[in-house]
Length: 188
Image (tube, rainbow, N blue to C red; front, side, top):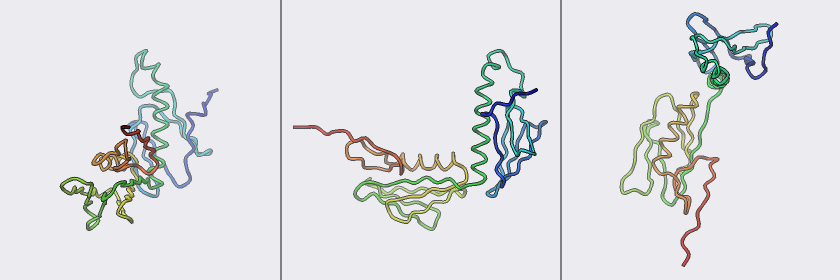
C-alpha cells in the first residue's frame, strides 16, 4: 500500500490536458492560451479517475546520499513548477507600474516602442517584445501582460530599473503594490 502525501498531489484543472512521456522525462501541458513543455527531474503518477497528478520520490538520475536527502526539496520544486505552468497556460499575468514624479511620463508609439520622459537630459526608448502586451491608458501608468509570468516580471524589472524610486520623496517607477518607506530629510 502506497501512502500519498497531500502536498505532492496536484489537481488538474478541467480546461487543461496533459501528456506525460516517461522515456523522454517531459510533461506537455495544453491549455486555452497555448502549450508548455516541462522537463522533469522526478517521476509522476497520473490518476485519471480523480483527475490528479502525483510527484513521486523516484528520480530519473542516479543520486548520491546527499542527493537523496535533497530529493524532498526537488519534489517540492517540481510541484511548484507544475502549478505555475498550469497558471501560465490558462490565465494572462499582469504587472502594473506607476510613474511618480513631476514630468515622469510614458508614451506608446505604434504599439512597438515605449517612449519615457524621466527627468533625464534625454528621452529613453524601449522596444516592446512580441510576446508581451503593453498598454498605457494614462501617461503615468503602465500595464504589462503576458502568459509567461517570469518574462513579464523581467520586462517590468528592466523598465523599473530606468528610474528606481528614491527614498526621500518616492519619485521614480514603482510597482502597483509596492510600499516605499520614506526617509526623513535633514533637519536644520
